[in-house]
Length: 405
View 1: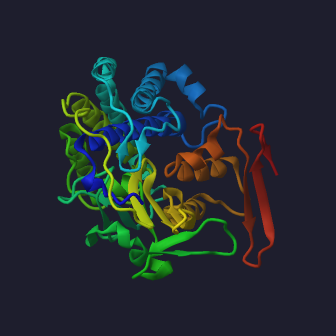
View 2 (view 1 turned 90 degrees about the vertical axis):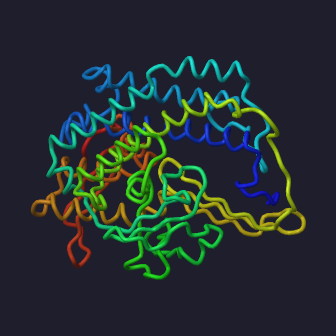
View 3 (view 1 turned 180 degrees about the vertical axis):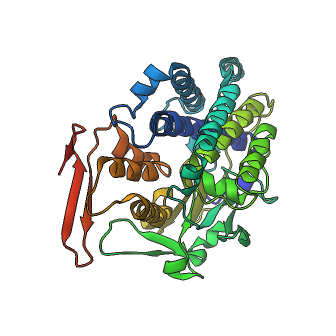
């Protein structure tokens, strides 16, 4: 609304914003993988729910867990150095940044970097080993062919901060490339359904039945033609090659793609901290006031749309957000349907099925993961209904972690 596009920001402000975003993505991916996903992957999807938490990982695999804690801590140190706080900092302002990163802060962050990139590589190697150890299970579990949407750079490179929208079809062919996100409303429509508070976005040209898509790490790695940092690019090529050279539809591929992105973030952070232009020059710029502003970024969980309109008194007259959880809404529903179709036996719901549904949800989104994986004590209820709508069976996990029928 201040009339400045990302392309017109001062170079130092852009570098600081990118560094901040890499730190945020790194800490979020570490939280998701080590704290929320690794218990499922290390102990097994049908293991005792009392084991499937970070405390058990610390006990059984202390080195893995501690590396995860330290990677997340370092990402938070990046955020705190730039914004003053680890959560809800205020350094990013319309038109740029309100504070520079001092030379001393850069040197401290570089000194503290240590082995972050090596630990990211080791986490990547871990998910590859776990994937290969149970390949059919990982490839088939909640696997759904979908379209994919993400930002990409002009050359098709992985882009987390700013770019155009890229859409791939289920078969890997490009449907849109570097689409101007200011016109996202022509590309994406949103459906409302009576049984859910969440909306259901879809590609307008395909309609709501065929046009739903996925976002996030799996979409970004599937969509891009390259990654600009060398070790992450090598990992991307291995990821695609290991999955037959085409689009990867396995939902558990999200974890693999997430750790490729973590390595990319670590490599990028090191590069930026060594850049002498990181904090030199102007940090803010102003343009002509606008009454409409649209911004799109790749949040850790996926593509994030913000759209605001204001009147002459600066009062907001329109606000629309499409967050990653919303974009993945239909895909999560379909993943749960696939798990139920494959693992539901007879007319009785079981605790292992409850766990498997959690695993499918957890691959997508840490917000929903927290709702199903806080030390195994967050409530979850599943009902099995007949075609007439009659409840045949019901199972739930209560707030104490116990199973109730």
